Image 1 (tube, rainbow, N blue to C red):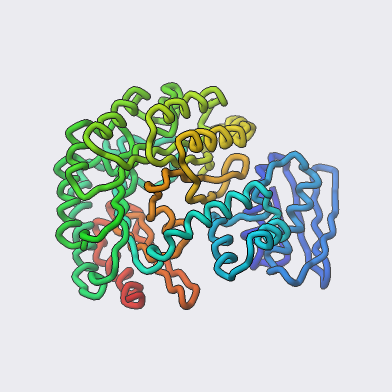
Image 2: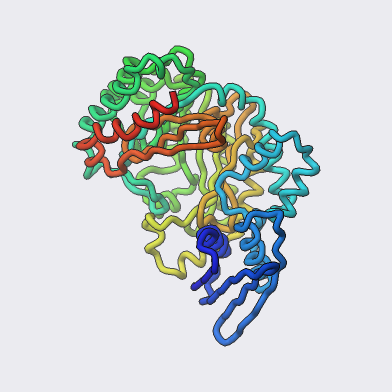
Length: 468
């Protein structure tokens, strides 16, 4: 696939839109703008097609190019599903929130989103529904901050995963030195009384798989947080327990005795054959046992994650998974559409296997997932998209009304500063008066992070000093 655009400033987003079509044909595309038109020429083998689209100067340059390409490609591939239109950004609800903040009524917003981005009515209604639910929580989110703690260790690597993490067979001896460096980072930033006095809303311990920590290592991590971080008024404390092969009753009881208030158990599927294919070392019965123990010892806020479009999963498989979920009755459910990531082992599979993944009717999978969430009285409360998602769809979080995750809203809508600690984590500092966000990334490689934690601290401290 070759695309040439006469404007480098729009080239990246135009290529992103092209990629979202998942076209297997070897196309050559050229786009040129005149004073009033954008010409799109598409060569497919010996066939050459030319499309002319008038430029609307009311739109940004990027939008005009994307609309021209979208119309051209839809003319050639009319059956291609694109409910999100030309939108390639990962945070659609944020667009709706910004329009609502300008006191624009819903009818006008729907018209704007359809005319500017070609978003379907169904997705616009979903955006606005989620925006309305989130509006109840934005005041608390905007006046506070949260922290994220990265635990980048996993018992094994799933074939769809692109996160930089250490498998336990190679990284076991790095966990304690990693906690040493994590403590240095937290100690430095919470030695400042100014930061200490700011309102901390939520804490999220993610990974990797944080529950790969032994009980002693977990308790040490909690002790570090209790020593340096003001936990007293934290409204939500999430721990990604993740995979049941890293959990037993004793470890779950240790987590329950800590300040953790929200647990995430992430099966991804409730089919044993698929679990083996994706690289999981546990069974469906292990997931069910882990969930029931968690309930039995008193966890009343449990999230479960699913992925739609895993290898060879049919509608029957998804239905089976959702029936298990309905029986377990978690408090929230996050439904992901499989995204084909370059850094995953899945991308190294044959092109034929990837093409097979893309032929799944993920829209049907998404529909029965929404029905299952509705059966459980859950409402959609956050949404985001990623590159190379099957059927160009989305990830969506559902929750019972009193179990909505404040952190998930904050991280997706970018209304709050989130200070991140540990390797591979990214801090986001918000400056609402300037409508500006600054990101500071920590070193990804675990060993390099451990060896260079002072540099990590110094780099992030420059932005912290501006933010406070």
